[in-house]
Image 1 (tube, rainbow, N blue to C red):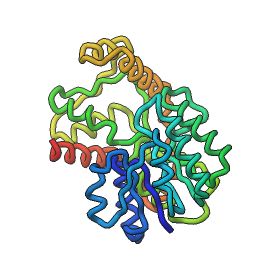
Image 2: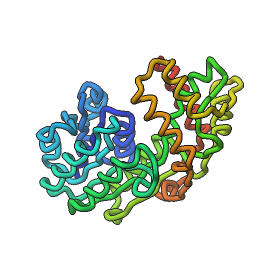
Image 3: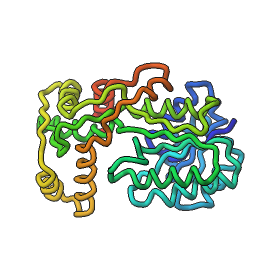
Image 4: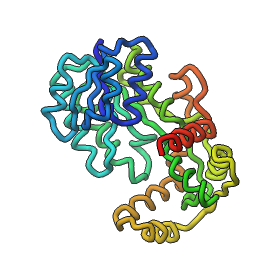
Length: 291
């Protein structure tokens, strides 16, 4: 079986390919589709076939799918423009007769009031209507999303957010990647939608404690109002659209859209999910090495 992993130049795509190889897939049976192929040179060096794939260029998607049996559609990275690109991949997969398409969606995408949800919901609906055999992985938050907050806290000793006492059921990116590899390789998952999350939801006070452990210094969580957040973001030089988007994202977290801890990810992995403190420590160490 030949497997195409889209967005393979990104972190999640790389980790999925690592997980596939770790599970015995020959590199020659993996196709890494990347918008910027230079970001996947290391994969080519390992024997993975690297091809150009841009969601907004249907001809590149069709070419990447030649000879492919299963595909992982990693959701696009640019909110507001993702849905059309996802449609292009689904259409090409349908035309190619793909036997399994796995899509990385968002936690409770069909039901939550969250600024990130509508494009995922629309993609899920389009995928269902397409008739392509599919598995939907509704990923909760990535622990690594908090790396910039932790790195700022290294200087300030503070993690500030307008989420109140919300909790988030985050898991590591590697956990989500391994789950994607599992459903790509195993039979019996087509037609399923999985709510994937960490085993335990953590508060932002817990997050500050995890950052303190990773950094070796005191870190406090400081709740701020939406207005205070928007003012700080504007002062940092963000444009009005980005300020509004970030503020609405935190408002959604405050409403509890990422709070549900579900055992599905641990079941797919056959082990507990990576604790947030461990995942954040690893992410901070990696960021400091790369800096």
